Length: 244
Image 1 (cartoon, helix red, strand yellow):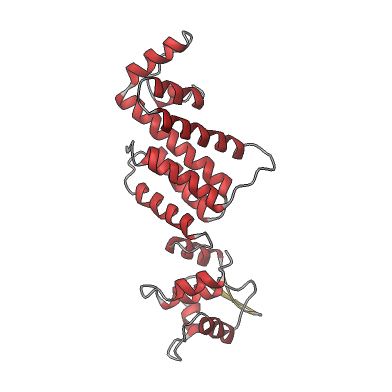
Image 2 (cartoon, rainbow, N blue to C red):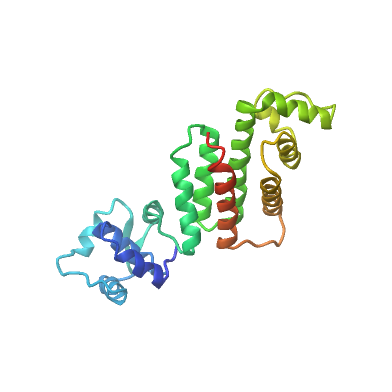
């Protein structure tokens, strides 16, 4: 995490942040270890004058390992970076940050451990800039939600439709059984029993295609906004609709 000047300025002026967190933000804007004077100068450049009452060295030495002093100066540690991620700090575009925040709101409502784990990993990957991974994990969370929804509300109808289309289908009894069906076909069967509308099915199949592109070694690239758009679509069309 290397915090750019715009994000540093925005975060430093949040009143609810502690002195320690604000100094960690400044450290996160440096590629190399920095001196106390460097920290003060960086803060001033972002519009925050650090009072002489701030004992920066003492604050950092009591940061529980979030920052360490090396011969060249102070630097943020992995623990410090994790602390900033907990606060929601990243260099993600504003839209991508909002999507991560919305996903965290949904996370608080999830009782199912499997889905919760998928969503947690999707959030962590997204905030860490691992966009392909965030697309894959958010898709796994969404398809798990749909599997659970079918088991709870439409299992008999789904099995009847699946058998009508393919007589070799062995009636599913749980989510694991549904996982044996190809996801594209699962969406088709769900649409066949009016569990989802055509437009929603089409968008989900596009998302599945993107997920597949991200799940195999290739030169395909994804941006922060591209991943955010994928996650937002799943939020609007799966997570918010089929809450478990």
